Amino acid sequence: MCIVISFEDVRRYYVVGENVIKALDGISFDIISGSFLAIMGPSGSGKSTLMNLIGCLDTPTSGVIRIDGETLGDMGEDELALIRNRKIGFVFQNFNLLPKLSALDNVMVPLLYRGIPLKERKEKAEALLEKVGLGDRMKHRPTELSGGQKQRVAIARALSNNPSIILADEPTGALDSKTGDQIMELFENLNDEGRTIVFVTHDRTLGARCRSSISIRDGRIVDGC
Amino acid sequence: MVAENIKLAFSSMVQNKMRTLLSLLGIVIGVASVVAILNLGESVTDSMLESMASGGLDMLTITPRGAARETEIFTDEFSDTLMRNVSGIKTVLPVLSSIAVMRNGQEILSGESIQGVTSAFFEENSLELSDGSFFTLMNNINRRQVVVLGKDLADELFPVGGAVGSYVSIFRNQAKSYLVVGVLAEKDATLGVSYNYTAFIPYNTYEQRFSRVTQVSNYIVKVAEGSDALSVSDDIESYLDVIAGPDYYMLFSPATMVEMAGEITGTFTAFLAAIAAISLLVGGIGIMNIMLVSVIERTREIGIRKALGATPRIIRTQFLVESVILTLSGGLIGILMGSLLSYAVVSASGWNLHFSLPAIAVSLLFSAFIGIFFGYYPAYKASKLDPIDALSHE
Image (cartoon, rainbow over all chains, first blue to last red; front, side, top):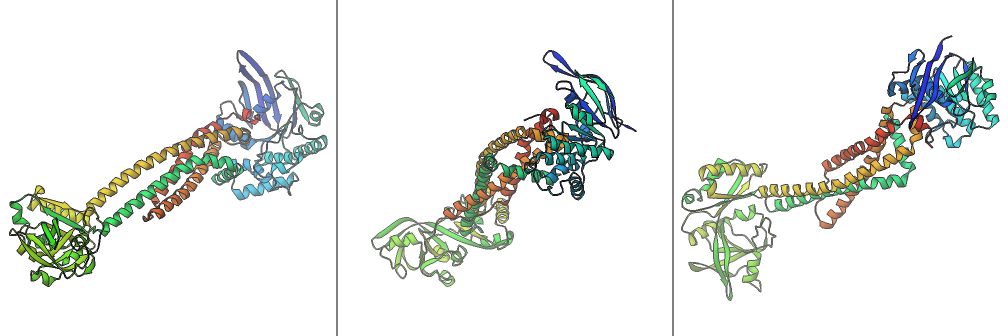
């Protein structure tokens, strides 16, 4: 088993006016390849900050973050963009599909940024949409899809560059419980295939379905395995 | 990547049709006026050239100045000398001229121009008759007392008509009667030369009756076909400078005039185009404005794209392509409108339409440049957005 992500005494402080907010205050953990980890915590716990750091959208104030052995600390914007493109697959609560593009074009965007030629992009994206059960919805725009379908498109998009980790931020939060359940099943299937999934949620029942979990509160890990 | 960006640019243009159109208006008006002004400028120059050419672009006039010394150079034989020494000349026609009093019955006109010319003069000047005929080579050799009258002159001397076949008196030292053989057709003055008040008599007749001195009043030089009038004019000038000196002759060349006129309209056109280009600048600011609005509206999209791995450069390129597509479209519409406008003006005024291809090319390049110049700041701003802030933007 290899370590996909490791955090070593990571701190993220924000300066607001004269106050320093310690959003994350010394966090260390490893995520092992093939795990299905829930990051739980109430709002304001530092959960989102942690997610942003795992997603390489942000850099820590101090401490070391490694993804596939590469240290993020001294990377510039371009390198972080490259990491996001190759190693991270984002799934958001509100889907965050590009509204002007069809489902197929949405799934093709990360492949486009990677420089994959059009024909190959299309083949890959089509295969992924088939995989998430949307083979008949490829030309539809996000506005023509239901919530569950949108999230499936988002998951297909997250998978497109075959990332090291799928980072899902409350992916069922905007869905009714039945659809949410289906999406959860899809994640479980992906994990069965060996995908590493990090699942950020405040919902304990959902968290319990993940195979391991970390709870954070006030910027620190209070419970983990 | 560029193909995707162009596709994206068009889709966002189409999505906000009204806004796109309004923001393009500045560029459209700017390009349209630049294109129209340059097209019209060229059309005017063209028409001017044509009307000058009809007056004989290939005709040069040499007029001796001063006195004494030149009389030895500017003689009848000088025509042949000039032709031998300067290449590219078809023929040199000497012209004798002076002022005389003319009379027909009660009608007396003074101060009219009398010119002694050879019969070839009429043909080379493309003069046309309204009545009668020109005098002939034989008339000249025989020193016949015949005259061809300019239209207005004929009308004043013969108010009731019937000039051809009548006699007219020309006073110079003593009165002599001349048979009117032809009346010229009316001709507009081109470059100040009009023969409507001139009487032409055979060269040899003039020599015998009017002048004792042999100095020729002027020489009309016809440039050979295929030779450049301007360079022949230059050659004649350098030749005359040597044999007579620059102060002792005047060389009048319609080609030089045309060149000057072209320069003047060119300067004027450039000036107007520069003013019109200011509206392009204003148009560019409009584009910058709309692109800034677009960046704010699409903050979330930028955040999503960054999360999916778009580098700042990719984002910047996307917005730059969009603003260039926008201004290029404006440029194309402007070129179309400017061309239509110049076509309308030209049709109304009867000039020849001349599309200025360089103007069209420059307009296109310039609109693309405006897209880059005024699109850069909004694109830069988009590329620098923080992905976390952008993603949480509503």
